[in-house]
Length: 474
Image 1 (spheres, rainbow, N blue to C red):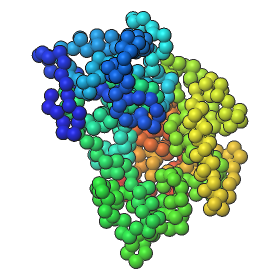
Image 2: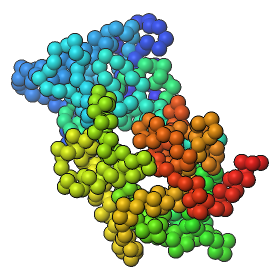
Image 3: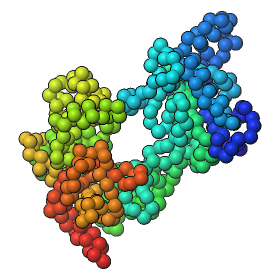
Image 4: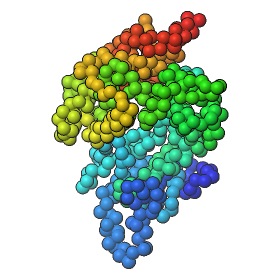
């Protein structure tokens, strides 16, 4: 396999002929524990026995590692392949590593294969698509924000990592303890990877970037000299979104922020969520909107162990609202606060207690910003219609309508979409919904949905929907 410029050298072992696609690439990096230093590629002390006069003690310590037996299972898998390629430091050849997770939901940790004798402790393997589990070879994938061609939608799509990203992720070894990170790919798959990933600024929604540039009074943001310049279409789409949210005005042939635009720039949020908070005082539901926006600003506060799916559904029934996911999350947060953030309650209800505490911190910060703006902090006192109206008036660009054939299509681009299976509305067919994000896999799925009335959307942006309706008719 040809070596890539700028990447570590490759080392082959077990040479010989093999059928196409059977050869394996292993990215191997060791690291030592230490939290923030986990990204450093360091050779662990156990990989250098010559540095110590106590070789026998080191060998005994090495064999006592829980991963020692797992190493045999990994090598057995490689022996089943006709050929393989090892990429990494030759000092690490044959050295056992300590697998670890890099964060997120740890409820999906996996044990070693059942047919081998269980080690004295549980061996967690990170169970996201970027991991490798014993007895299986998985292609690593990454979730990247991008738009399908000609769709006009901003979605979270699963794509291959680049070669440099794959190498960077081997640096996960050592975040919590000394060890080695194994990343396996078939050679055919690894050769398909791009060398470098496209810069995020060329893939993501630029509305927040444009808002902050205008807040800093940068002249002529349309021609701003980015290091990795986004496409003109992306810049124009961001400006159009800010204009629809009422954040822009034209002064002397230059773009400038309106008073509401300057307030939106004060929030460390996407413009649509900042507008949601600013509109909440009009609908007398600031307390509820602060909670909902905070819940949407962190990783999921819920976890769903596949092996306990029925139990999860049974426990969650008491929180579910027919009005959508936003109200359901609001019910969960209110209960969490009422019981004082009890960790046992979180465990029983499959709620991530750490993320819930983070939600409380984010909410407190957003509330402080509202108070500095002298915004009235009011509660809807159980009136969820006012909360849904507020969401409809700020998320009107992310809406979908039920079609005669029972499917959904977005109201702006008429792109076919579907309700994500994780939504409480998955088995329902509301006439009109707003969503927070789109996930693109085999279908384009809407996530975090709220039931709204079509009349509320026309109230929020009559010109916008009249224009879309006219375009659809033409």
